[in-house]
Structures are given as C-alpha cells and as structure tokens.
Amino acid sequence: MAEMTARAPGAGYLGERRLSLVQRVLRSKWCYILILPTFILVALFNYYPAGSALYHSFFNWNGANLLKFIGLDNFIALMKDSVFWLALGNMLKLTVASVIINLTFPLLAAALIFHLRALKLAYFYRVLFVIPMVVPAIVVLMIWRFIYSPNIGLLNEMLRAVNLGSVARPWLGDFKLALAAIIFIGFPWISGFSTLIYLAGFQAIPTELLDAAAIDGASTWARFTRVELPLIMSQIKLIVILTIIGSFQGFTTIMIMTNGGPGQTTMVPGLYLYRNAMHYGKMGYACAIGTVLFLITMALTYINIRYLKSSVEYVAS
Image 1 (spheres, rainbow, N blue to C red):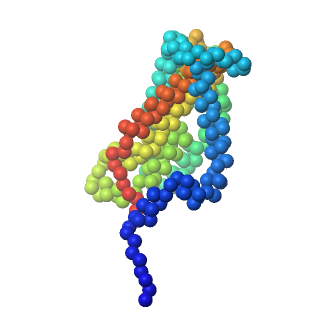
Image 2: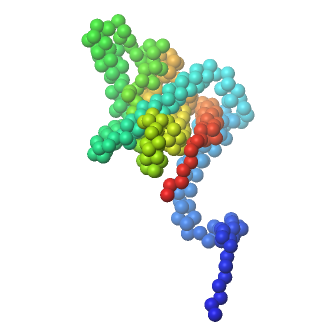
Image 3: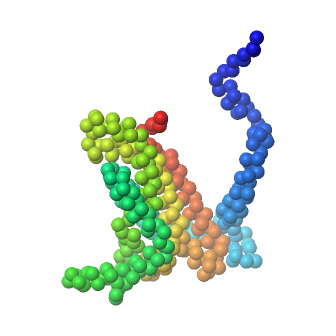
C-alpha cells in the first residue's frame, strides 16, 4: 500500500525561511556567482565614489596630495555660503516646475493616446513622441540658444514681426527672466519618456474596471480621476522620483545656456559643485556640496515613497 504524506500549506515556505543566510546562498550559489561581476561593477563605480565623497567632505582636499582633516568646517562654510543658498533656491524652483510639467503635459498626452480608438493612429503618436528621444540633448539646447538669441533669435524675430518689438529681450541675459527662460525650454514639455511610462500604466489597467465604470454611467472625467488616475499612481510616483533626482543632479542645461549667469542668477548646486572642484581646486568643499545634495534627494525621495500612495489596489486576473 502506497504511503501518503500530507504537508500543511506553507510548510515548505516556512522551511525555506528557517534556512540560514549561508545555506540559502549555498543552495543558489551559481546565481550569486553569475551576478557577482555586476555587484562588483556597481560597488566600484557607484558606491565607492559616493563613499569617497562623504569621506573627503571632512577634509581640506585639493584632489591631489593635500589632505588635511578639518571636521565639519566644509559644512559650516557651506551653511554660510550665500551663493550656495541662491543655487539651492534656484534648484528648488526648477524642481517644482519640472515636477508640475511632468505630472501634467505627458500625462495628458498619454491619456489621449490611450483613449484613441484607431490603433494605427495611437501607434503613430507613440512613435511621434519617442523620436525626439534619440536627438542628443546638446543639439536641443543649441536650438533653444538660437531661439533665445537677442539679435537673430527666432523668438525676438517673431515678436518684431507682429509689431511687439518692445517686448523683445535678451532672454538669457535678463536677470529677471533668465530662470523662467530655462524652465520654458522644451515647450510644449511632452517628454517621450514620461509619456511612455504613463501610457504603460494606462494599458495595465484591467479592461473590466473601465467597462464597469462605463456601464455605471461615469463620465470621461470621472473615469479618469476616480478609476484611471489612482491606478497609475505607481507610475506617477516613479516620474516624481526620477524628476527630483534629475533636477538635483543635472546642471548641463544651465552650463550650456547661461553658465550660471547673468551674475549668479541661474546658478544651481550641481554647477557650483563643478566649479569648486574643477576651477577652484576645492575638492573637499565640492564633496560637502555633493553630500548635502545627496541627503536632500534621499529625504525628498523617502517622503514621496512614504506619502504618495495609490488609493486603489487591484489584482489582475
């Protein structure tokens, strides 16, 4: 007579959990061996530079031989640095503007594409928004520099053509308008990457939910705000995180368009860090700036993950 053994549900899973870390590693050793080179490269080119920056932020370091421990002096000097606070304020303005832009225009474009009935037309628009992603950023920025040129720029020429020559300005050289001109770059602000992320979220929504909302008589706006939007909250959270990180780390646009000018009116921490490291030889001070930026970015990312949650959960069948 065959002998049968019954096992309680979940017993195997509990048994797996009781295994020690070493036992689990040994059981899957080839998996760990195969991904070990990736871990080494990530540690070498990501974590080591971050740790080195934190370590050298406590030193008076010129990037070469001079290395003198000064404790928190770099951070104290940074808190008293008016240029840093100006740069930080500019960065916060740019970050808020970028978040608002990425939460509106690409989202609207993705929603319109998602609701197109003609599949070929929807595919056409997806391709249309993706094509600009292959254009190098430097090319886009040089085009916008030409648009803003005070003498032969397209913007001023258009204003003169409609008898609004008095409104023409040296847009990137105006103390009051330079930062706004930077924000306006990329108009109409439909990022191909953000649009695709949102579109993927829309397409993952179960059709049963949308059909049920339509049967209940929900309007288009009600379906969007009460059904679709809560279900793509994960994509919204991702876009917010990536936008914050990109805004805090990026300074290429500022460097190419204004180089922090006129004066210091468009200075951002990333560019200020670069100048201290490469122009002034104050590597320790630059490391302190990088450390502060890292802490601010981590804090904002945590707040976003902690408090921006989806109000609706569903299980795909």
